[in-house]
Image: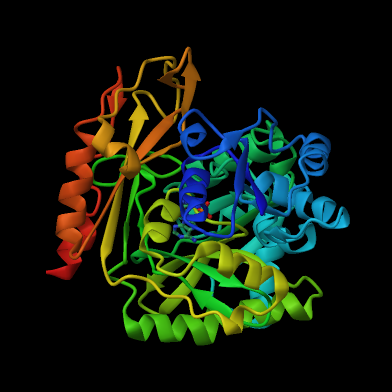
Length: 421
Ligand code: AMP
Ligand code: GLY
């Protein structure tokens, strides 16, 4: 079979590595992929958002199956377009991708179906939002409605910060149209857990839980990033919490999407906070998380392609999805300055014996040499029987990889290890 994966990050590299193990796949393409993915799949220089060219490529190359992982093309309806050409896909259609693409939609869905989440108000008018803030408790959380490259969420500690956030989103259009509507919500406290799940709309199968590290600096300081590292499983996601999540969040969300006529098929990501009142939803994503995928898929023992096709065909209940009992850790090596300004184009040196532990996010080939091309450059991943070993090994790999201006957090997994003590 000929399979194409749409996207170009570390997440796509992890998906491709997992698919590469499937005996059923003869040819694997990445659109556009990156300089690291090129070692595992044939890359074609077509942007994920150039829907016409992606469809043309699929027809020209007689693609049998497509995996769409980034949020933008899912929200733009790439799966609908490919399916109209008769190409089965892994990933939700546009009507279902709205669960991530509109925070207002997801908040209203949770309210309507009684799914636990932070209390909130929606605003389309800046003055009304500013008036509301004067009586709102601080900290409060200001969210742009639409997709904003993961940057559309501001936690405001003071009224002045909250007002600034509203003005920059609604009046200065910092996130373009994504900020025309905003959500102002209650600030929740507690450990965060990411749970990715497979669902075909009838069955929902949570994957091993994980803990992202979103802030740029050690001790969860500095700016929010796309994720500086991740561990799995997440020790705060106990069996009791998992059971509560299944009953109060996972199944109700799947049923709610069906009831709305928006059946979700693909990977549904639950960003959860374990508050003193129980688990609550912080956000939904309509796709695999990045970098969560880089620790979750290496622990998956079942063939990923078999699961994906079962999701597409609506027979996920027939596939036993198994994960190893090991732990995993991913340490992200970033370009100094990320998530703001940074330089690119530095050669990356990776020892031969580390290649299979590295998932490339921002690397491109220049005269055959891998050079940096993004803020997050790569993830060094290790799996081991204990979390402590996985963390130690991931850092041992990360420390053998070199490029100019590289930086990483030194405390990935620390909070989880403390919780295990
Ligand atoms: P999101 O893009 O919605 O995942 O938000 C980014 C980050 O902001 C989350 O991972 C949380 O750490 C934080 N966050 C979002 N909503 C809330 C909330 N209601 N209370 C506290 N923290 C939040
Ligand atoms: N790691 C969070 C996300 O993928 O949105």
